Length: 456
Image 1 (cartoon, one colour):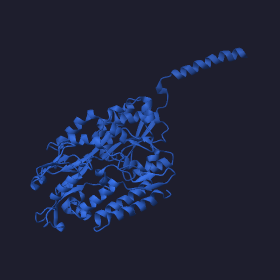
Image 2 (image 1 turned 135 degrees about the vertical axis):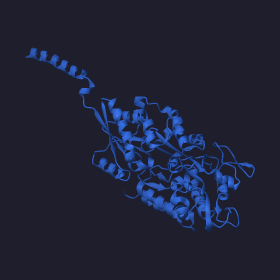
Image 3 (image 1 turned 60 degrees about the vertical axis):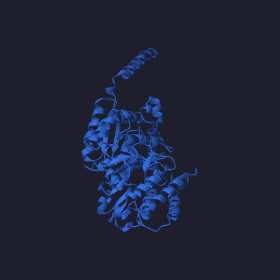
Image 4 (image 1 turned 90 degrees about the vertical axis):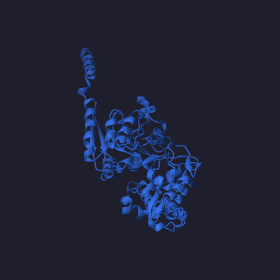
């Protein structure tokens, strides 16, 4: 009996060894699912290029099968929430920024252990952009991919008409106002925005005869913005403090309180920023204010080039500083892995492919400045082919040195309800003259306290 067993055991070992030596194709590949739609990417005209990227990955990988799901942007949040709740969640989501993933922050995987384990080189990106993808609650939740820095768009012809010098061409340079060098800061922006605001009789907002009821040209607007975006020119900030016991306190940083006083005065006292009704009017292209040609300066992001059509009568300038510090808010799209993934190592391999080998094709579909510096020349050459006026894109690149950390898109407790309250506050102050703005800020904080600590 013992002899038979002795003979069988080596045979079994041989079988095990042979099985272990079988080629990889004898094993089922791991399936990684990529969910597109929280941000851009789900439009029909965008899908073929992404499917081609998926096919290219699968042709070169026997051990991983990548599948892509497209869901329209308006349905994507609920669809993803349902998939997570039913245990059918995808592995990867994106491209998407922080605003699109805040409702799912608890579901995001910290990528740092996978970066460490694989030796993935983060030094290929600007340090500020890597840090931008770190959040205190979850760690490193994305790798740099598509960047949309912010700066000022302006119309040189309107500066010339007003007898004003053009804005500086680099961060830190002074502005020449009435023949004198002055800092390129919020105070200077305020002064020139008033001079660039003109009524139907040709008087500007610094003149006694100026009629605020007949404005035909405004000096400044924050193009397509929300409440927190409006504040970041005055520096980064956060609207909550974590008490460490499961509760949160709503706070208003002093620099942001100053920002809301400034923008409220800009609308209702100094009149160089259009109110809600003016911005929605035909004169300001029904909301596309800068593109109307009747606004001299707009703060926005690189993505706004999408909506300028054939207009080439503009240039860009650095964001002005506040109390000696420049903050240029950033939007950034990337791909994220959910912490419910059964195969995070394989998902990380796919992720590095999407932001690496496939990045050129995907950035052509999504837009956005490449996070990799060596890819930017072609990106800006493509923009120059559309906008032939000779835009100083170095300003956009330099803006990455001044990103807002924490981001103005950071997660908030009870995020969706808090965001809705913030938007209602912004709409209110843009629509109602005669407010005590500090009292309204205090009312907002009281409401946010209740929202933050409401049972979800």
